Length: 305
Image (cartoon, rainbow, N blue to C red; front, side):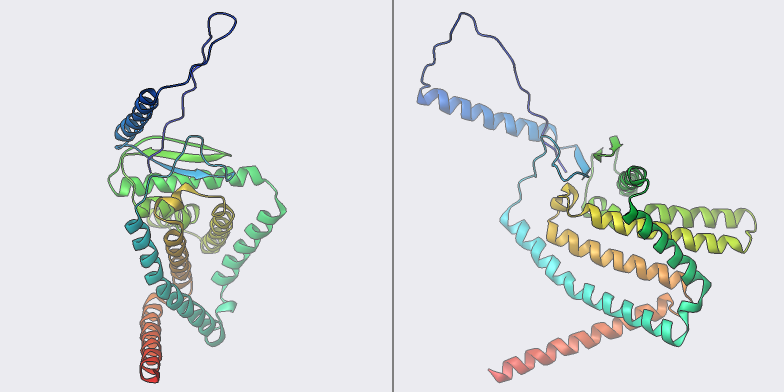
């Protein structure tokens, strides 16, 4: 996402006790307008190969930041894509609650140790978040994870990171490549939870782990998944440049759908009764039921008219 450089303010002094004001001629006004237009074009050309992926914490826009111009066709296409994705959000949510409730009632999922350690981690983080204890530390940790997720996504797409920074006011990454996945990945990838799973797997390959390690893993994942979700919900309303880059509506739809899939994946991995195969089969069945319902409504409207 390109960022307009900060405006330079030139300070100077005038000679004499006073300076006579003179009305500008039409040609002078026109020449200055052309000069400003050329200056804007040159700045865009100079910044074309660099993009800034930013996280604004305080809701105050970055000084000097301007959204890149977006054509009407692009805005309309983003809205259409967002509307197309909404049924997928509904089907995924329907399948998630259906499968989770079935596993809870039929397979006593709530009695499983993995569920309780995961839930304990979620409750601990939720209480910590709302009590405000160590708020600055967790805020910095979230911004750090946000920018590191951007960086990992950039590297995954073979991009280059030339600069990055993190503070309690926000963070930024300067790169030569940006796309919708790079811009939105921190909003649906719980980095610290994923790192915990990665460390667990690597340690498991290196040497046998004690049984208590499973409990620690589920508690860790629950704690940092709630950390990711709560801080993301806190951050999104603060006018994020990452969301505006690809259209706020489309970005929010993708973030919701991706987070739903990530949570479903975590539960499928933690609970054997759910399973990835069962979730996928039920998702396809619900998609077919939804399509049948839509076709039935269309036929009723058609023949009713």
